[in-house]
Image (cartoon, rainbow, N blue to C red; front, side, top):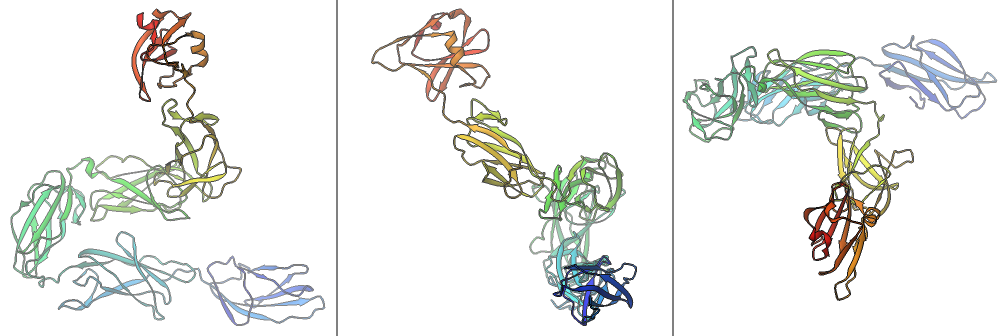
Length: 601
């Protein structure tokens, strides 16, 4: 740490590996005298500028450390003493708390505690944390939804916008040095009309209940369950009749048996036996229908109940975002997330081919789960898989963990899709395609720059699976050298070199003289001037003959019986008869209208 020393200043640090850099204007200094917590330290400094001094770890204590410094020159003249306090803070803030939320909407306004209910869709959460610390509010999906600075007494408030339904929250506190507290206890809240005070005609589905199998409990909309007769719960006006409808997928709504709300406005309804699939439910009490409440019904042991990894999340470094299986990432602690039967225990195992690990997490009432490796993963290719106690392991989810800034992007293929030479353009060859499809690998979500002859050609963002693909702008005929980088071009980059030649080869043409002509062709000319896959992509040496109606083609040292008719082909609007030599290596294309011995064979 570099700073200017002044009297009576306070400095803070979160590590005992603290140092200070001094740049005195005098050049004849002999010693730096330091008094650290009243311990005298004599430091020779002759000829040094700047001067770097590190605090002794054995004297550094948590809390306030007193420091004074002065220079002596070679004449033993003492300089001015600078005094300051150095505060070492390595302790995270105390566990913060969410105390209550305030409800100022509707006829029932009050303070609402944990597991309470409010009809206020913009409630203000209140709590306690370390004074002056940054309080960050998370929802049950571990998403940041608000923050505030605790005041001098540790009090904080955060207003949130919430839809009707069940919500869970927790907070952390972070001090000025970046020390983060443990998570607070969860604070759960239901947002919806006050029980017993729901508007007439309105009925809400708040949750469902699973009481079948090993994993039971509350179900939220979107959950996966093996209960084929789930019980719905909701609220409405007291003593009102609740109409229930349900449907499979996008099918027709089916009327269910009505339910009746009790004196508190609560109601429940048990579904009839349902087959496996995605089901939606809705309710009303004489008014409009509620928002659909969805459940995925799955039979015991089916693949639908298998725990699966949906994606990972990279939140480290320059390039962040979702990761799919196969991705390259510099985040050594990527957060994996997925789906499983609601309220079930998910077993996670992971390995790099040498070391094998496992742990468990709990799927929530919506069937979602999350997990972050701890400790961090070493660089290498890691495979992850999940299962529950009643199902087999999921398909492996693979991540290639790299050290930050350790891997440049790669170009793995340059593809030509123009007839004659369709396929990969090997480095050092030529192509007749001037809009080539480029493919490669790189760190997921990163930006790759593509250079042609050291000039930026285009750019592309690497996909969430670590692959990228882009079609080049139109390339001019001539030599090209492609290279890829996360930044500027430099001569050390690997290159992919090729020549673009879009000009067609010359045809064997007979100029029109106003009358039919006779010309000859030998096998040697076909072999010498023909080219492989010239007009038809079949890896045969091909030779094309053009002329006029009535022209005569005489064949020298060619036996007509050695040539087989292969039908017709149209090239640029002109029809040709195709003849293949029985040797299988040569083809002759003769424009229709030209007379040859082959026609008479």
